[in-house]
Amino acid sequence: MTVGQGHIVQGHTAQGHTVQGLAVRDLAEEFGTPLYLYDGAVIERQYLGLRERLHPAVELFYSLKANPNVSICALLHGLGARAEVSSLVELETVLAVGVPAEQILFLGPGKSETEIEACLKAGILAVICESFDELALIDRTAERLGVVARVVLRVNPAFQVKSSGLTMGGKPRQFGIDEEQLLAAPGLAGAHRSVRLTGVQAYPGTRFLSEETLVDNIRRILDLAERVATRLGFEPELVDVGGGLGVAYFAGELDLDVERLTAGINPVVDAFRTRRPGTRLAMELGRYLVAHSGLYVTTVRSVKESLGERFAVADGGTNHHLTAVGIGSAIRRNFPVRLLNRDGAQQTARWNLTGPLCTPSDTLAKGALLPADLRAGDLLGVERSGAYGPTASPVFFLSHGYPAEVLVHRGRARLIRRRDRVEDLLGPQILHDFHDGFHDDPTAERSS
Image (cartoon, rainbow, N blue to C red; front, top):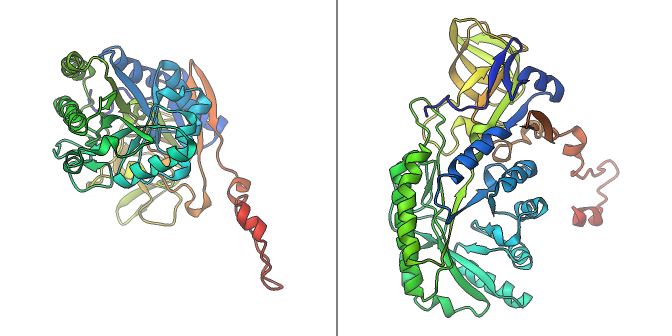
């Protein structure tokens, strides 16, 4: 699938583009802009399209970091997804949704003792450990609580991978424990009385668009897990093969072929299950499940020309969608952008789409081909925006706050997050009176 296919927009009417029969123009009028618009049917398509073809032994865990909205999580959990979380709030989110504790993994470097304690009290499937220091902290916390912690070791593998949009292993990294260090610690499984090592996880990279590379990664991770478990002397109850399934954002990229991907993965899983029939397998998916579903809708406030270049200045920009400017990428390329509310002129022109921030870096798209007759009041949509949107952006810069988020599901639009109001932004702040000297209120500061 080439970039531009399979996007959120489902049709076109006299009122412009539609999502599940609902005109984007009407949704923008109802909920306002800037607006994140998610198509639930696309999320279902992404999840079920993989689930129905992938080996049934591989459990799919939704990575909340991609989009932690509680309704998005609820939709995916309803389809059967487990949950992978990386903060206390993400843990509370999936518990509120009703994800059973035994279907939750917690990972990430720099976990706090509070987070570890919450995991152990909830009884989640496993805490994924990223360092020897963290392993000792988990042990101390478990001992204090009088429990035994189930721990999966995250390994920074010695092998490096190609075709990754963002490399997460195989080099010096804050993630995981180096493979060589683990293999040199054969007594680790018995070194902590309140820890039980239950598995291995590796995540060598993300945004892979090569089926062959993903299959090779999984094969290597399964081999690595067996070597580590054998060396350290524990039975692997779980192997987490990471994920990193990519999405085609840019011209010339191709989306993954799920048939080809699973045809490569399934025999590898079969061979592993023959050797280790009692070991559970986990795959983490974030971007792959939700990116296609999202449309960032913004209204053009003015158009102008400056030194021969056209600018469309909109009501939303990088404060809501920093990922669109190439975060994590060495090269600046545009996400797909389109006019949503009407048919534009057949003639196109190069436009710079910018936002309301007082910085030249607030450019959502540079030199994008859009209708030449673009004008104030037009709606523009940045496609494939369902992952790493507002939560990965500086939403509080210039105090603009969060945009609204809307999910279209079964033909009905549901507000799943209201936009921030002035009181939402000022409420947590503490105003001191400096006119008659500084009078501290330590109670207010301690309660903040």
